[in-house]
Every structure is written in C-alpha cells, then in structure tokens.
Amino acid sequence: MRVETERLIIRSFEAKDADGVLRLWANPRANCYAGDKIGTMEEARQRIERSKPEYDLAVCLKQKDTFIGTVFGLREEPDTFSPCWNFLQEYGGKGYAFEAAEACFMYLFEEMGIRRVYAYTDEENLKSQKLCRKLGMRQEGFFKEFMSFVNNPDGTPFYENTFQFALLKKEWQTGLEKM
Image 1 (tube, rainbow, N blue to C red):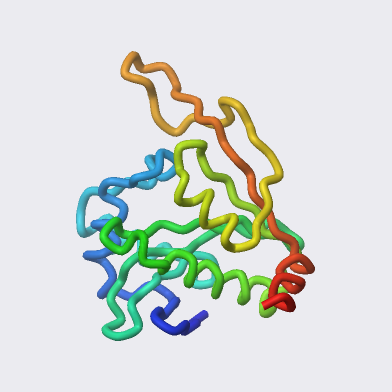
Image 2: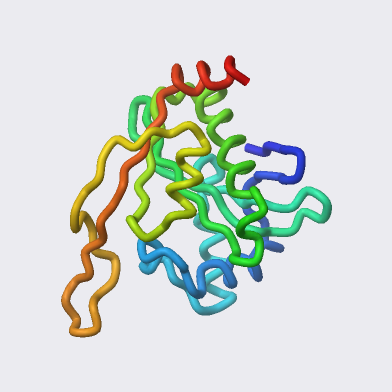
C-alpha cells in the first residue's frame, strides 16, 4: 500500500526509517505500547523487517519522505479492523495523525472492503479520543479497569479505564456525503 495525501506519504517501511522507528518506540507515550519498546538500532531494523505491509505502515512527510509515525492495526475476519496510530512527539498537534488515519480509513473501507473499524484508547489519552471523534467514530463503550500494560510502583498491575470507539462503513459514507 502507498497512499499520498496533501502533506503525507503512507507506505511500507523502508530501511531508512530505522532511526525514526527507534526514536518512536524507545519511549512509548501510551502504556498500551509499553510491550513494544525497543532500545537499539538493530531492534529498529528487526521491527521494520517484521512489519506486514498491509497492516503496519510508515507515515512520512511528503516533502522529504521523512518518517514521523506509523498507522497499523489488526484485521479480524471477515471484515473488521482495529486501527492504531503512533507519532513522534514533535509532530503532534499538527493534524498529521488525522490526515493519516483518514486516508487509512478510506483505504480500509473502499479498497479492503472493511465493514467496521474500532479503536481502544485509555481514559487519559485525550488526544486519541479527540482524534477518534474527529474521524466520525462514536463511543461504544467505557470499560473500568479493562487492561493492564504496566505495573504500579509496588509491582501490582495498573489497570486502565478504556474507551472503545467504532465506525461502520455506511456511517463513514454518510459522513462523506455531508461534506
């Protein structure tokens, strides 16, 4: 997959992305990515080699093809997809995550025949919640102490409150018609 937007290129990972991949995953900002933490350039290269081109994509600035983040996810057969996004901190607040996610939703719905997308975000991650809503996703649920990705200082699991957002293809299409 390769998609271009006004400011971005969304494409398969390339070897030149290793430095950005290392910076992104060396200190994950969301607890849900704590298990994905890496610490060396070799681990970054291995992550790139293991990426699946249809479900794990680099987001790059169009002007210089500079890596700034990633969109990825999990397909659940037959027609559901759970997207995720993660961007380098210095590119936050500029609309890149929305631009990339919107392009990916278009690809998922129009090219891959996905019927439903859903995303989880922890209660503290207000930026991802805002992004989900901006994408037209509706809140479907709120789960108290739903998952644990990290431990408390005393070693016990830290369970996070989690929102679930979702969007159906027909809702996406209706939203496009209103534009």
